[in-house]
Every structure is written in C-alpha cells, then in structure tokens.
Length: 441
Image (tube, helix red, strand yellow):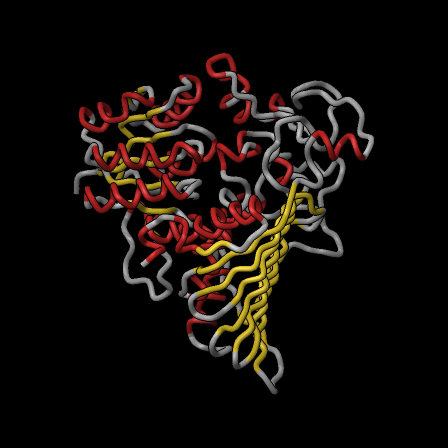
C-alpha cells in the first residue's frame, strides 16, 4: 500500500508524539511531507527528526501557505497541533483544500468556531479525527466496560474531581494557555478531556451547565495578597524558585522555545504569579445530561499531588476509580517542572500517597470487589500506543467505541463553553442555546 501523506500544522512540543509515530512505528503507512509553522526554528526541529530517521526532509511553509502545501505535496491528512484558538481556521482550510484532519483536543474554543467546523464537515464530506487519548487509558476503558456491562445499573450521578499538581498545573499559567482568548481556559483546554470521558462513559449528551470558580492561587493579585514580593518576569535565570521553569535546563524545551524566541517573541517560561492571567485555577460545575444523570465536577490547578477520583452511582450500586499519577511534588526530587505525569508515566517520590490506580465496584447488599486494570508502559498507561494505532492504521471494531470524531469534540467543548458563559453571567446555561446545530437537534 502507498503511504499516506501527512502535513503538520503547528510544530510545538505536542507535535513530537505524531512525528515520532510517523518516523517510527507507523513509517510503513505514513510519511510527513510538509510542516506548516510560522516559527522556522520549531519547524526545523521537527524536520530534523524526520531527516535523522532517514526520510526525505518535509517541505516547510508559513500558515498562509497551507492550501499550497496540501495541493502541491498531495497531502492526504493534516495533523493540527497549533494553539487552540487557531484550530478552527486550520481545520476548515484543510477540509476545503481537500485533506482530512487529525486534531489535538480541544476541537476549538468557542461556539461560533465550532459551528464553522460543523458546516465545513457537512459541506466537504471529509473526516475530522479527535485524539482523545484518555479514552484509551486502560483504567478509563475498564470503567467504561463496567458501566457498559450494566454492573451498577442505570447511572444516576457522577462525582469527578481532578487535581493538577504544582508542577503540571502551574505550567498552564506560564504559557499561552494562561490567556482565555487563546485557550478557552482550563474548562475548554484541559477539561475537554474530562468531559469527553463523562460523555463517553454515560453514552449521553450534556444539556445544562452551571459553573463557579475563579483565579484564586496564581496571578499577580494573589501573589501580592500573600506577600510574595517582586518576582522575575520569567523563569530562565539563575536562582529561581520551585514555581519557575528554566528552559535552559531542558534541551528539547530550549530548542523548541528559548532558541525560537527571536522569531515570534513567544515566552514559554512566564511567571505564574505575573500579570495578564485571565483563566481560572479553581473550578466547579454541575452538569445535567439527557439520560437524567448529573455530573458534579471540580478542577484544582495547585494541588500538592496529581490524579483524579471518579465515583459513579447507579440503580444497582457504585463504581469508584481512584488514580494517583504523582503522589507528591518535593523540593529537590528532580521532577521535570513541566511534565504531565499521565503522559510520561508516573515515577515520582514514594509517600503516603503512592502512584497507582484502583477500580472498585460495590453493588447494593454486597461486598465491594476490585476490577483488574491491564496497564502497559508508555504515555497514559499505554493508551497513547492504542490511540496512534487507530489514527495511523485505522480503527477496527471496538466494543468500547473509543475512536472519536469532530462531533465528540463538539460535545466535549460544549460543557466548557457553556461553563465559561455561566462563569460570566452567574446563571445556568443550556447547551442547545450555544448556536451549534449538532447540540440543538
């Protein structure tokens, strides 16, 4: 079979997973023929990875050359890893130029751009794949199996609490994610993963959302209130504290960002207690579903440990999934200051909260029992390998329905978009009022 021809739109750190797959496990099926990226240093970083693997150098072009790259390089599929607010434009342009799309979550950050994607898919008839890798994580798949098998009956409610620690959580407040106009805030950028899981577990759609939250830990005002004093504007300097990121200490971050600053002025290591942060670090939502179930959700971005807890209540009993991805963040422990432990695989310090996962089911009038979780090495407990296989080989018959498309992407961001509106107004928001046809039917 001839290899499918791929273009990469957006060449930051997240693109490494896809480039690595193309030149590695899936090189017999895929080739990277073009990189569309405004920063020449970042584009060259990924081009070198391709060349070092013995493949021809991909053609590099600016964002306004996307259609030309697709046409002249005969691109079959475009992988989009750009800033979140740029997703919709790149998706629509790629579809209209004749290519299918693979896009990182979130699909986009607001309702008007989601509607534009919906219209473009209907107009072109082309495919948009969402890479929701959390679906493929064995622990989350195990919970889906329990619920799908009806072990706890009809689902009545879900309690879902996510903790981001002071390594990983802080990192969203150093980079472009700190600006809601670019990321949609953590309700869209980060929590779209979580809301997709709930939509998938429930096999239902959200209908009404009420949200509360704010910026209560990071940011200049909170720093002043706690008397933190004057701080450097960025972390790449000598003698920094535990909340700072020194790009000089990591070769990949230095190559992708520090060495690239002169071309676009983007600073990857801004102070988490600086000015200009417009996203929230503490969030709570109540979400009603068409099935009749209710979700109670919370997100904290400055926890001393990282992981999540899910409790699903049903008419026959209860299922509880507890996950500790990193049990503690300690001074001098050598942990990468910007690492997502679920992506890299937890290997942090031992503590009273050891890294691990446990799924327990208990039916009414019965003893609790533990459901085994078949994990594996690699990001998200081996889930990334399964996801990439579906992306590059193609999904087969999956009884858990893990592959996701643009419609799943819209349903996941709908919760965050409605949540942002609720934060603004102080009122509950109905999903059907967002102005997206898929959600109003």
